[in-house]
Image 1 (cartoon, one colour):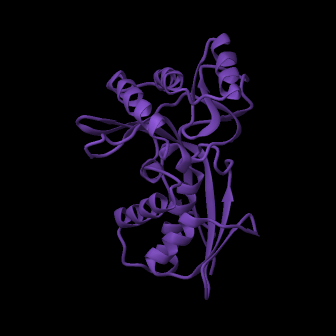
Image 2: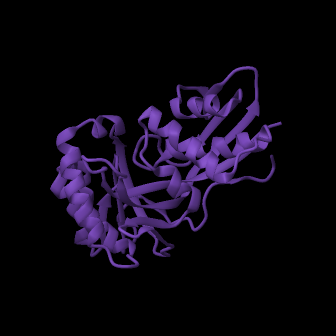
Length: 265
């Protein structure tokens, strides 16, 4: 029997790596209504396809191994893979939820999320996307912990390609700049930030860390010329914007809910 599950994509506008002396990373991210559907079916071996075509997908394969299940998993993304939408995390989290149902696993929701996070970390494909995708909304870290809100403003976005997450996380110069800029940006957020404020802080972060490509710079300039605010999705050659209409080609909203099983399984 095929089990279907969905997890929303996510966009990270601010990211501060863990302090050199140890600790947790911090960030500000939001889930979007566009995401990833997986179709999972018990099988003799672990195999992964993307829209029916065989493809390597390390975090999904690693998750299945961690859960002790063998399944055929077809990943059907609604957002581009590797462009800063957390698609690998969404696929991995959706797979965990589908596998738990298909194999009647004695795992809590929190345990499934942790398993998906471990698989993402082991593969070097994400830092904490699954925690955003599990809850939905806009989440950000403060000294007092994680806060959440659900903005209603529409979001436009444009993407030109991917930026390898593992490469960025291995870049010591970037990580040092990201830690400084990320903490400054997070500390400047209001007690309940708007998407515009996040975009503005993300814009400053991009400038300070120097990670913007010419495509990102051009799209941000177009948005600002139209009176909107724009930031960069980490990590992808992708720009998200608010308070504009028709400036960027794609449009979505913050997802108020997180990953879930789909009907018709």
